[in-house]
Image 1 (tube, helix red, strand yellow):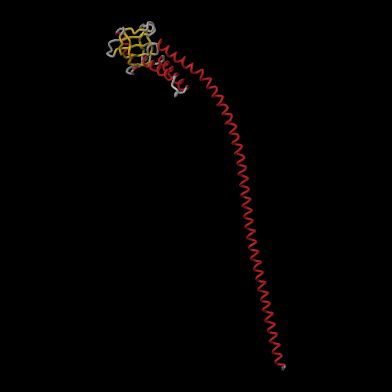
Image 2: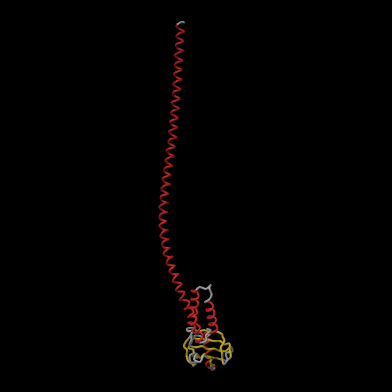
Length: 264
């Protein structure tokens, strides 16, 4: 083998060695790049996990704070309810006491109402016969009401007081109405007028006859035409057909012809 051939083989060998070395370097470099990429990727994944964990931690902290606030609110509300329950318990005890007192009051108010009805009956029997039919019917209704279970004691008492108020009005007001009167054993339908309990007079529907109630002998007494003119004047005032003025009417206490005063 000559020197030229040997030199060629040497060059080829060197080239092959260089290629092999370069290929080895490329492989090492590629592997290094792969490792670096893997590290970078792992770092990114780790950062994501850290960020996710941080978000979850913050969310958990927020949830814990919200739960603490709810617990605090519930504690305050529980204290509030306990106060309400205590107050309601006191009110309940008060109601029970009132109920027991109501029962005692009822036992005393019922006899009182019957006594008041007896008083109305006596007043109807002894008083001037002002609206006598209405008063009898009112008393009868009240007496029947006392045994009605669907009417409360309070309502019964109220209606009896109302009846007494009406009786009081008879003694302070002027009023006219039509009703029956007994004259000499005969029943006559006549116009009647009262001025409180001072005077109670009547006139026939044809205005030809006049009467005045005498409470001393409890009779209707016939009146003269001159007194009848005064009675007509009183009816005109009561009907607002004449101006209020001094009225001269028989007084029902004695049946005398006296001045009753100005009425409106």
